[in-house]
Image 1 (cartoon, protein in one colour):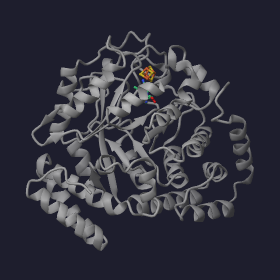
Image 2 (spheres, helix red, strand yellow):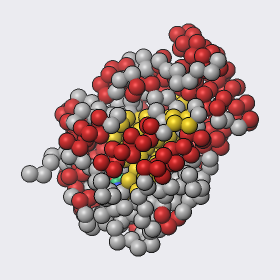
Image 3 (cartoon, helix red, strand yellow):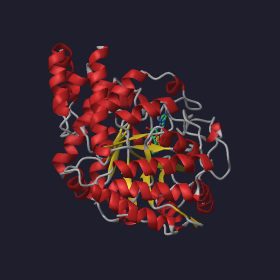
Length: 463
Ligand code: SAM
Ligand code: SF4
């Protein structure tokens, strides 16, 4: 029997209705509801997706900015993807790693090569990585992934260490997910790519990934295995973005109903050019820059407590604009070719897709700090077991800020002292002083104690 997670008919019906009913006063009443930061239902989400007047669009963006600022303040969590292998048995037409693509050189890093990558990331100052791989592992099979995670955690250099390993790998069985949890992963991330069955079929021509149902049920299996931090996402550009947005809401509703908790993060990749893929350069349903901003803003209002992740697929300009609208996590200094950190430059004929932001971590941090955002390398919640429901229980009444703000400042100061260039350190210290001034008493006192410890040479201070 087909899993009953996405109801396409209902989505199409809602989109038709919302197109007819979308008027200014209706939109304004949805926006005033959204300001309470309690989320929106699917019908409200559909209505917001139909906004086209510049005036209402401005109001949507303004509301998203307010909600983002109330819940997340000015923190931005930073991470780097770690591509360990580009071997793949699937035929996703948009991806350079697809099996039949002869334009890509295949490579699965050895554990020693993975350790070299991790050292290179640590020397830049990264503390959080996202392990990424195609769906085919060397002869060790799935154990290859488990070994890679162990290698990442075990590789330390000077003050450098990776404190949280998230993974973006193909769907697993419940038993395998249990092993992934035992390997101490942070978030298990998996994008459905498109929730539309027909589009899914058109773009996934072979391999296990061609099975829509195996993929749509993967997050359920991860949760059954006890992984409470999960990330979902859509690859925008394959199908109408409005459809995908409502389907995302249905997926979230399903998880909340079945497990009492939704996803920890949502990723919003847009199709980028990829070696050997026509589709990647000519998306079937391209998403314009303005619609892309709309997607981020609507998600921020619809699921205020779910992190939104923006990768280096996007240009620095688009990344800046979407920080304000709702993005809470960004990758920086990324390479999408296995071995790309230790061995230097992007190697296009080994990479998954081309990047929109080529700047180093320090350049990104300098820029983010100048925009008034506080770069955070915090891994506190995950290490203190504040995940899943426990995290939401603190986040919803606003209590989590008293942890996130001090943790952001202490990990940012670590970065500045250990890795920051002179100009980034100067910009960062000014930002920290400013942030302390603006904090409430509890957070300020906590932050000052933690910052003093970091200045005295202690590391990995979190609350
Ligand atoms: N192979 C696993 C899978 O497909 O789920 C995990 C890793 S895959 C490399 C990670 C993600 O990259 C995919 O889920 C897809 O959304 C994204 N991706 C693939 N091709 C892309 C492209 N041309 N532009 C942007 N993102 C792309
Ligand atoms: Fe393989 Fe993932 Fe690329 Fe599809 S998206 S070809 S499964 S690496």
